[in-house]
Length: 258
Ligand SMILES: Nc1nc2c(ncn2[C@@H]2O[C@H](COP(=O)(O)OP(=O)(O)O)[C@@H](O)[C@H]2O)c(=O)[nH]1
Ligand SMILES: [Mg+2]
Image (tube, rainbow, N blue to C red):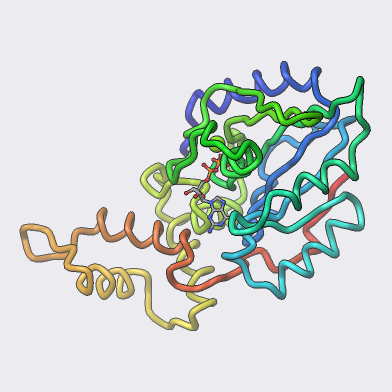
């Protein structure tokens, strides 16, 4: 399973910086709020934890509402998407944090690609943090100063071993795990099984790929479909919502925030 060294480094750095913050803004993907908690949340124990259900524009609204209600039972949460005004998050942080010496220091955390850097950039109004489709694009740690709020962007974190196949498959569907990095074929086929329910498909993965690759002209020299290219293009399209807006985590009962 994909686990670059920089994620280990990110965890060490986060632990170091945690001493300087009181509030942690955990960014989850609204399409998979449970799968996007696949990291050691106990490193944040004792901190004021706030949740953002991000990319709500790509999720099924009915489930976002259910997840909001569930998470609210234990922690403050808001839903968000990059099309909205960041004042929503500013207000949320201000109403749920205690200022120390006149300022609130907030660390933003989450698995790769949930939109942490995009939020930071909206906050600053400038393009400071690098954003992008490639998970792991945020490497170093940087503070963004905004009057009384100081924000720290961090690189994505994940469990070093994703034992749960469903979690890995959902992280693949939302683009938090790059498909190129997945060496276990059963995770890819599991992702397709989860995805096909949303579209009511009865095709096998191979049939679907064949059709998708042909339609886009991804043909290799021998005349067969270019499997790698088709697979990579397909999972990128799914994660960007090209097939529709789906919530893959439907069981809110999975939420057990201590
Ligand atoms: N549709 C949609 N895309 C988003 C949203 N937030 C971020 N993105 C996209 O998701 C990708 C990853 O964002 P980034 O901020 O780099 O994620 P990070 O790895 O958590 O820092 C980028 O292509 C963003 O444009 C959102 O609310 N909606
Ligand atoms: Mg980032």
